[in-house]
Image (cartoon, rainbow, N blue to C red; front, side, top):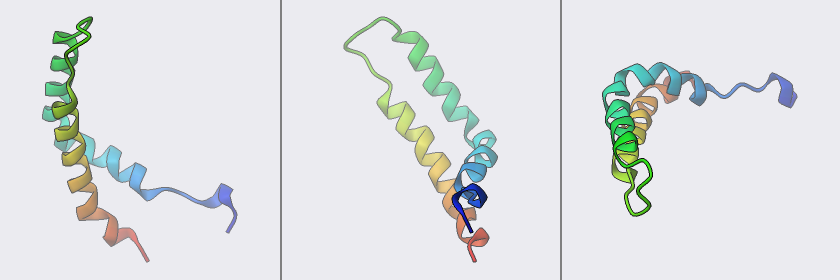
Length: 67
């Protein structure tokens, strides 16, 4: 199998899990809008909460797709 035939299942699962974590993405977007232009502020916590949700969802599905 060459590189052109390889497919990353994780990317598909991340897209599949996005709706389940949409509420956290909205919280992150709201934070980003609220702090726009403020150099000292950040939304790292909100972003990490969203990524944790995605990762947890993906982890529940990824091993089912491995051979």
